[in-house]
Structures are given as structure tokens and as C-alpha cells.
Image (cartoon, rainbow, N blue to C red; front, side, top):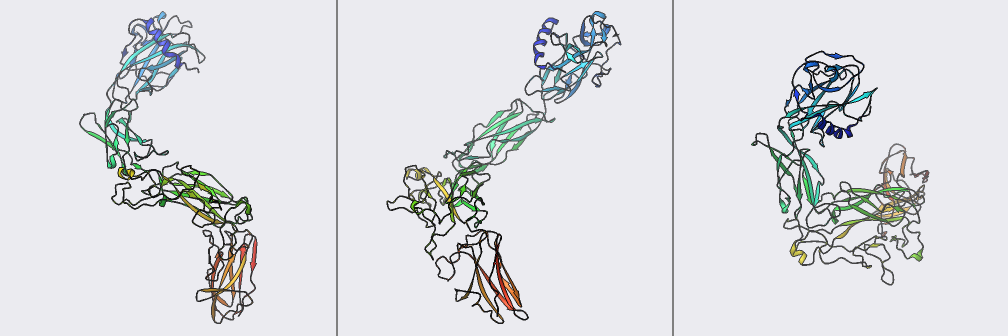
Length: 622
């Protein structure tokens, strides 16, 4: 059925002018049932006059029939309502050309409207917005939903045939009024905020705003919004000068009111307390917001770090192997940096996502093995690689990953005012570089040009060393006058992963005396009686830690074993003895094996598995 809601206002205005007078009125009574809607109308029409004529001369809507018909008036069962109350409204459609007999032979399209229902949002509503009537009886339920005072209710009729309305002309209109009492305030509630954290006022932060808008809502005891209600605000904590833009405001048509929180000069946590008065004008009704944090929003160097899901992927000879790299960032107060803070990444080899955006101070990227591995680059490029101090050769596969974001270098707040003051301890940092050879200093060529990737904070084309002033945003006026807080800094962290060879396993035997290890072979190693010990170094074919998932197995016949055999660790690059001072190789996994004779001693076997490859040493015997 077509519902011409958008056209009703135009037709209604035209018809009211044509009907003469103010067109409003209401009757209170009992009886009747609308067979179309099934609603109890509780209206006494005053007569049972019914027209069965097939031709209707002048259809009109009102109350009653025959001589009792009241043209243009509605029957409202309860014309005075409490806030949020409901009432039944009924009417009849008669033929004014046939002694006001109720029309039961024709079909009419009926539309319900009121002043409050037409507002946005609607402050009253009907149980239905329109209906098709075939028995001359009209009924609807009116519900007050925040309307206060007198509401003009209108029922309009149009001709209709087989459920299709003709909108060319409004045939008749009936009106009445409902008086709705002032709502009784029931509660004030906290709705939410657009910013659970804001930045300190002295920081121009790209992520955190300096203002937070908090919304509260006043409702009556029927949970309907209360408009035009005064609400006052106060803060639970004003540390550092945090304040409110206004101390009071008035609710809108939705019952909502907003408070604006203005940041201060130091770290703090505060809440907004909102208060309104009950209907008696004396009783206070109060609620509080969730806490709002006033913070720097900037990562602090000693609160920033990265980690990897695995440090020895089987990636040296396999491309497409993934490692998840995760950044953790907090500010000077060790609160998580704001959601959406960007962390940038760079890697010595492979593919890595350029950045990630934090959520609760954490975000992750994927590193994927590909390209030329470290230790195999073209020497003409002049790049540096990590060097094995024992062999003086490049460590094949050792890969540096660096992450950085905008932040503060860090200081010790000796007077607990939340700002750096002259004389307080601080650290400063040079520009970020990716330390591919793990030398802890940027490497340069013969012309003193950096050969390791660096990130130019001040965009001057030169790698800058650490300054003598504090790098950050939290400074007192005296500290700023002394040159501190002139700039911020890239906080940074790096890690190394070893791209180990997949399907690669090498086993080496060692004995130990006085803290010095000596390599031997299976043929030379004799099992002592009745007990003894030896050591196994498990490596890949590059002399590095085996790939994640590799495992060492030790079995014995005639011996009880006390061994730390099993899977290789996944959170290590496998450093053993970088200088060779202890006699071990630089990288790998060291396993200790102790044994005790158990019956007739026969042998001990050592084997290792790496992906699909298995290797074993010859059996060790007495």
C-alpha cells in the first residue's frame, strides 16, 4: 500500500483552511471496536446509524453517527497524560449527505499525525502511521515519548480502492488535543566521549587531541529524554591545570548535554562529574564519566621495543618464510601510546611491511624471506655485514631489523612535576641507523659517508650525533630557555634474526675441562666407566643455529642418560662463543649429555633432524 506521508502536511494545511474555524476538538467517552485494527476503541458513538448505500455523497470524519455526530472532532479516551503515557483515539467516517450514517460500504485511507510526532526526533508516536478502513470505524493508540504540553492530533482520510490510496484530495480531517505533563527526572547517565585520552597542552600531537567532548543524557522515569534541563559539571582531579570549557549547559531535544575537557600541562587522570536536579528542584542527581587520561602520547625510548615470533627461521635457502615482528610502545609514564601511532620498519634482507599502527600500544608486521641473504651481497655495493670474529668471514644469514617512531629520549623526573627541569638526569640519542654489522656505531666509507641506512630526523642530509640537550616535549619554561625540548627524537629498537638453512644438520662432539671445550670425533670419544659426560654442538651447514623446528635426539643401550636434548630454541640467534676463547664455535646450539652405566654398557647414539633431513653420528662405545 502506498503511504503518502511526505504529502500530508500540504494537504492538511489546505483542508483546515477550507473547513472553517480552528478545526480542533475532542470528546471523551466509552464503547465500540475497530474491526479493521482489532484495537479496543472504548468509544460510545451514541448511535448505531449505518449506511449501506452503494453511493456516498459526502464522507466526513468525526465522533459518533446520526444526530450525535460531531464533525471534525476526535474521541480521546484520556486527554490528559503523564509523561510517557498512552491513550486510545477513535473516530467514525459518516456520510454527511445521508444523515451522518456510518459508511460500511466504501474503503478509505487514514493517516495519523501530531505536532510532537512530526518533530525530529519524534516526541510522540502512534501505534500505526496509517490504515485502510472498510467499516467506518477508526482507532489508534497515542504514546507520549518526550512530548510536553498540548499536542494537536490529526486524523485525515483519503479515498481508496483495493488498498490503493488516491492522494488528489484530503476528504476530511478530525482533530483533538492531548495534554502531556512535564516529565519527572529519573536519571542522568554517561553516554561516552570522543577521546578517552588527550595530549598535554604543550604538545602538538598528530594522534591525540587536546580536547575531549563528553556526553551525558538526562531521562525521565519512563526512560524518555528530558529536554531543556540544566546540568552542571565538575572535575574529580585538576592536576596540571586540566579544566572544563564550561561549568554548565542545557540538554537538547535528545536529553543530551556535552562537557568539554581541556588538557593541562602534566600527566593526569580525571573524570567529569555531571549533576542535575530532580523535578522537585532540590534533590541532586549525579553521575561520573569514565576516566580520561591526559598524557604525552609520545613513545619513550626506554618504553619502546620490538620482538620476533621466531629468531631462527629456515629461510636462508627458502623464500617466502614469514616471521611476525611486533612493536611495543609506551610513553614517559609507561602508558600505551595512542591507538593509531605509526611505527616504521626496515630490514637488512627480505620483505617487511613499511609500518603498522598501534592498538593498545602494540602492532605487528610481517617479515618474509626473499632476495640476496646477508653474507652473499655483491662486494661492489660496499655494504657491511656481521662478521664472525673467529673466522673473520661474514655471518651468512644474520639479518638486522630496525623499528622507530616519533618520541622522547627519556629523563628522570626528580621533582615529580611531569616535566624535564634543568639539572635532572636525561639521555640523548643520535639519529636512527640500521646496524647491519652489529658494531654499535654507524659505518662509513673512505669519504666518511655512511654505508648503513640511517633516518634523517631533521632532513639535513647528514647523519647527526646525539645532542647535549634533552630531546622531547615535556620541558619546563626554564629548561626550554636553556635549549632543551628544541626537538623530539626517533625512539628505536633493533633485533637480529638468523636465516638458518632448512634441511640442514651438522653434529659436532666436544669434551670439556676447566671451562675449555675441545672438539673430538665419535671414533676418538670413549665412554668412561661407570659414568661421564660429553657435549654436542648442533649447527646448520653455514655454521649457524639450526632452523626452528630442528631437534636433537640421544638414545642409549646400557646407560641411563641425563641430557638436555630436544628442540632447538626458537628465540635465539644461537650465539655460543663469539671469540673462540672457550673453544666452541661462534654459533649453534650446545647440548650437554651425562650418562651412567645401567646394566651392561653397549652404546650411545646421537642423531638430529632438520625439516626432512636426518643425520646421525657413529655410535659412541665404552
